Amino acid sequence: MRSKNYKRVYVWELPVRIFHWINVLCITVLATTGFIIADPPAILSGAEASESYWFGTVRFIHFATAYIFFFNMLLRIYWAFVGNRFANWKAFLPFSRKMRKNILHVLKIDILLMHDKTNDVRNISVGHNSVAALSYVALFIVAVVQVITGFGLYADNSGWWLPDLFSWVVPLFGGDFMVRTIHHVATWFFILFTLIHVYLVFYHDWLEGRGEVSSMFGGYKFVQEDRLTTEDIEDLNENSEEMESTPAETSPSS
Amino acid sequence: MAFERNTQETYYDSIIKQGYSRRDFMKFATYIAAYMGLETTMIGQVAKSLETTFRIPVIWEHFQECTCCSESFIRSDHPIVSDIILDKISLDYTLTLMAASGHQAEAAKHATMEKHKGEYILCVEGSVPLGDDGNYCCIAGRSAKDILIEAAEGAKAIIAWGSCACNGCVQAAYPNPTKATPIHKIIKDKPIIKVPGCPPIGEVMAGIIVHLITFDRLPELDNIGRPKAFYAKRVHDSCYRRPYYDAGLFAESFDDQNAKEGYCLYKVGCRGPMTYNSCGTIRWNNGVSFPIQSGHGCIGCSEEDFWDNGPFYERLTGLAGFGIESSADTIGKVAAGVLAGGLAAHAIAANVTKRKELSDRIRRGKANEKKFES
Ligand code: HEM
Ligand code: SF4
Image (tube, rainbow over all chains, first blue to last red; front, top):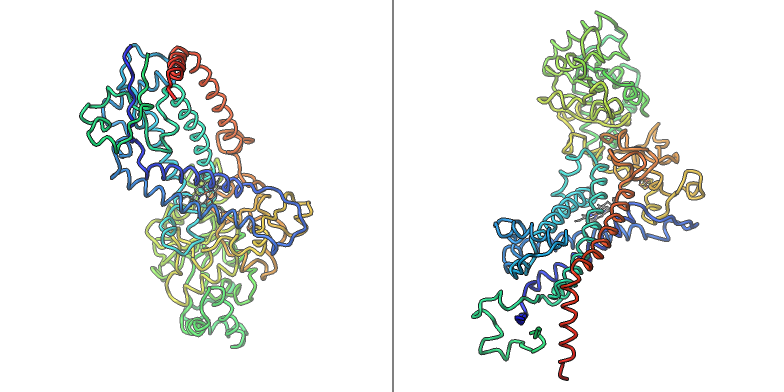
């Protein structure tokens, strides 16, 4: 059998990884504090209000995290124009025929669990596969909804121009009530997305064995050598001492 | 008519003629300036313009409404406030308060509309039904829509009193059988001041009228047309129970110890955090109290669609189309549960259908482990 030589490919650049983990943290904090704001726990105590400020603190954390979430998102949008091909905005929408074919392929193989008739390595995506890419577009839209409704609610609490940019939101929806309802419902989309997203990451890691999970930490995925043009393979260059080229990277295969 | 109305009289003249002293008048000017949110240096200007401006003619139309706006106005704290509406603003036509009736009243209205074209203020209380050719509300044989369009024609500005005129209120609640419609959806070419609330606070109503008189222009409005002086803040932002909210101390039901302690009513459905009004500062009935102070959450009566925003005693309400009992959270929990089940099933199915690839890979991996040197 042909030997499968795996090569290390730098897929997720540092800014993408930093964005990803800040985003994870923000969404976790925002969803948790948000649900506490929506339905605070019952505390029976004889305390006086002056002794405590915990609910105010929860709201403060929500708003502060919201700013981080928002600026983080802006940085990612910037990176979609200057980052590598896997981070580029064009990687997210099925512009090419190849990407549209990939949608069908992913639906067949990974969702309906069918089998490929021929084994074409090109079918395996290196960056996002085209279905996953669409799910990130959907997440981005929900995030925009969340930013718009969130800052819309926040605008009146603030004298700063940035939240004030969103003062058109509440009148548009007729009132705070509608805006809060949308904001609350959208939170559930983050939760549903996270379930699917995390599951599929593990799924790909387990079934493809190309370092899907670790790629978001180190940035590398492993790609079969025959997908790379030979002169491009960094490990074969003369200055390969500087490059890591350990035997562990190639898996001699039966 | 009950009173001899003379629009060539200044406000001051008519207040003095009514038997108030100059001192009373100055007190009133100070009081109303404070409500309008003006600086103390402006009190002189308020007094001055009440002394020098002639009374503006006002036509006050009543359509689909309950008259609570008029009631609120005439019950407002300061006697001169109610006098302003009853007498001082030269209210030329209002179904509830005028003495004339029938043809006589209609004739008086038309006389004002002609004589003061482009100058009179049109106050509208109530919404306008557009369903069935407007037949649900007819006065003097004409539909509310016709009357409104005719009266708006020569008006200088329109004041939409109350939630009915601003957003349709209860008669526009789902399914809105009469197609009750707020004023701004019918009249597009006139400045409209929206004064929502069911009813609005009397002092707010008076403040807006005095503002029109004093400065001869509209008060500063927010982007949906409400005067900023009274609707810029949420009830929640001026609520005296706010410290309990920030401390996370909430009444869980209306009869628990927390409610007796006066804790925040957020969890029993208070709409204060979503309602723009001045109840927390101006309060009601001569500043005696307001709903939250009396132990009942705010129902958001000055907000659009407040009747459709679900039970007044719940924080989050059912989503339309999913049945009464299901809140967003129940749907979310069910969806997450179903999804988690689906993913688990998928995981099992994947391991079964792809078992060949998996066992091959495991075998190769084990073989490599054996060949591993050090
Ligand atoms: C830029 C982003 C965001 C901003 C500016 C923002 C702001 C706000 C504001 C102002 C409130 C109302 C709090 C109050 O009135 O006390 C709120 C509530 C809430 N937020 Fe956010 N938020 C943002 C993002 C998010 C995200 C990403 C989530 C979920 C993942 C989230 C979940 C919630 C929830 C569940 C509530 C409670 C809603 C309710 O009252 O039922 N927020 N947020
Ligand atoms: S009672 Fe209502 S308005 Fe007052 S602090 Fe609580 S939630 Fe806000």
